[in-house]
Amino acid sequence: MILHTLPTAAQGSTPERRKDYAVQLLKTALRYSSDDEIAAFTAVIEAQAGAMLAGRFNPGLNDAGYHVFRKFWLSGGAQ
Image (cartoon, rainbow, N blue to C red; front, side, top):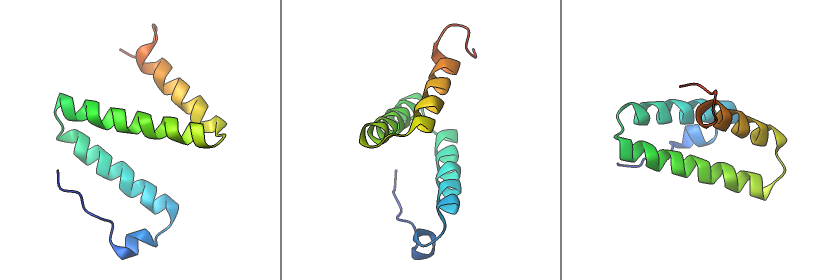
């Protein structure tokens, strides 16, 4: 995969605009990903979320992470 740096204008944009860009970029990449590539993306995102939680108190992220895990992996969650 070829990685591109954000244009200067994007780097100076608002956090919400950068979040929207990241979401759209990830959705696009996932649309064309193999199973192995999906696993790699998932591992990177899980590691980043874990690092964020280890580095600072963030109850919202902790709660959201638990709900996503529960939704997909605990019995009774989405199939």
